[in-house]
Length: 158
Image (cartoon, rainbow, N blue to C red; front, side, top):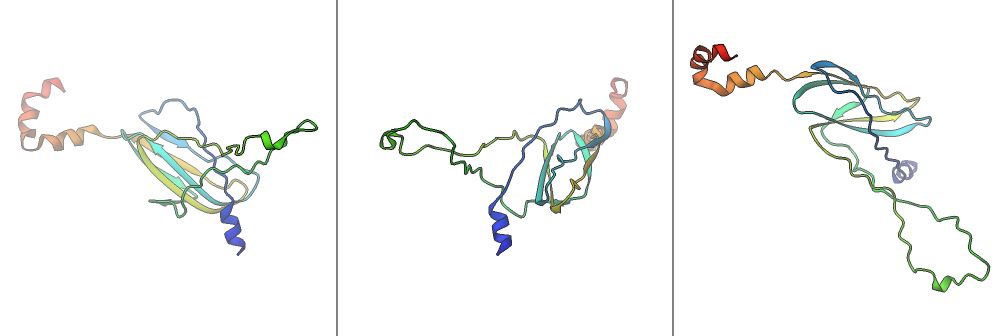
């Protein structure tokens, strides 16, 4: 029963990190922010440009889809407004809409998802070793039967 209570409360962090442009190859450290509290379930989605080959190393498990649905924003703030003596609550609006912050994160490139249960002391790690895709193999494959002719007549242009 205590696990059901833990699942009903969630905090979602969406953060953007400004970095210099990717080089032809390298390693990027993508560790999530460290929190001073235990995290029961960490779900990370990294988006990577399609023009790069990437290999991730992580303390979290690589998954195709998350084991839980993404949380919906909810705001339980009841307010701390002070009203003047004699305020007529019957004239106040019937419903004051309140909701959490719903951020739409832009989607591009390839998605890579990672999930880790029980993260303590900021123990989540994520690094990406990357390099630009080799286009010569793709070009060679698309030429097919004409590859020998292409090499012979177009050698000076390459």
